[in-house]
Amino acid sequence: KTGLADAIFVVGEIQNRQNLKIDPKVIVLPPQFSLPDFHVFKYNLFYNTLKKLRPDFVIAVNLKNIQLTFSSFAKSDLGFKLVLKEHTPRTFLRKRYSLIYIPYLIWLRLQGAIAKKYIDGAICITDAQRIFVSKYCKTNKPIEIIPSGVETTVFKPDRDVEREKAVVYIGRYFYTKLREFLPVIPSLISNFPDWKFVFVGDGSWSDRIKVLCERFPNNIQDLGYINHDKLASIINKCSIGILPSTQVEPFGLTSLEMQSCGIPVIVSDIEGLRTTVVDNRSGLVVKPVSEKIALALCDLMSNKKKREKLGKSARGIAVEKYDWGVIAKKTIEFLIRL
Image 1 (cartoon, rainbow, N blue to C red):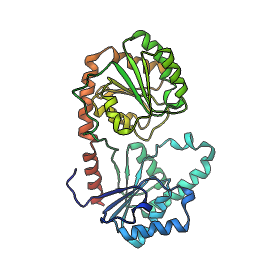
Image 2 (cartoon, rainbow, N blue to C red):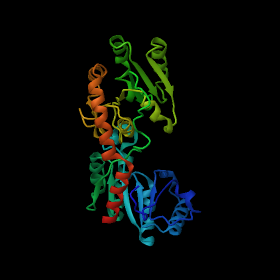
Image 3 (cartoon, rainbow, N blue to C red):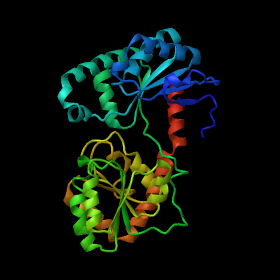
Image 4 (cartoon, rainbow, N blue to C red):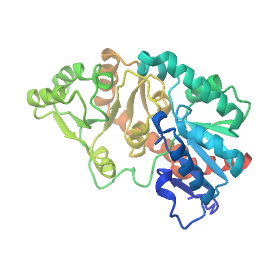
C-alpha cells in the first residue's frame, strides 16, 4: 500500500519461517513465546532462523515476552535494529496478575533492563503504553505512538444494505465487559420496542444473554462466534455499536471496525477504548456505569440525524487516521529514522 518495496512484514511463528524464499527486511515477532519456552534448543532454532533470514529490523511485541530476550541476545551477532512494540495496558499488571504481582514485576524489571540496553526504539499503540515503556525500560531511545489499524476497504459502508434499528456488541461475553450493559437492556426495550440488540461473540456470560433472548425473542439476537471476515456485513446492518467494558483494554480495534463501517460507537471511558473514539464526533465516550450507558444509548437511538452525522464523521476519521496503509507508512518512516 505504501509503495515501499523494501518493507516486507513477515508475521507468524518464527519456527515456521525457515523455508522462506524471500529476503525479508522487517520481521515482526508476535507474542508466541512465553517464559517456559526459554531453553537452549528453542533459542538455537530462533537464532539460526534469524541468521538465515538476515533482517534489517526485528520488531518484538510486548516487553513481558521472552522473544525480546531472544532478539536481544541475537542482535549483537546479526546486526539488526531491534524495535519493541508494546500493546500492554499501563494498568494491566495489578488487575490481571495480582496473585503473582511481585515476581512478575521483577521479571518486567529484568526485561526492562535488557530492553534499555539493546532496543533501538519503541512503538506504542497509545500514550498509555508509552508511559508503561518509559517506566520499565527507562530508555532514551525514540518512542513513537502508532496505533493499530483497520482494513478500511473491507470494513466500509454498504450502500446496498438498509440499516436496521439495532445496537451491536462484538466481543467476549464476560462479566467485565457486560455487567453494566445487560441490566439496562430491558428498560431500553420498553422505551424503544422497535429496536433490537445484536450480540456477536462467546464467553462465560452466554447463559445470561440466552435468558435475555428467551425473555425478549423479538429484540435480542445472539449470533455467537462469527469469523472475522463476516463481521463487516453484520455491522452494516446495525445503526449503533457499543463496547461497554469496565476493565482496561490494550486498544479498541473492534471500535475502529465499527466506525470504518460508518456507524457511531459508544465506548467506555477507560484506557485503550477512549483513544479510538472522538467524543461527539465519531461516537460517545461514557463512564462505564449503567446509567451513563443507558443515557448514551437513548441519545443515539432517539436521534437518527445525530447517528448519521456521527457515523459519517467516524468513517472519515477511520480512513484518514487508521487505515492500514497510513499505519504501515508511519511504521516504515519510523524505522527509517532509526
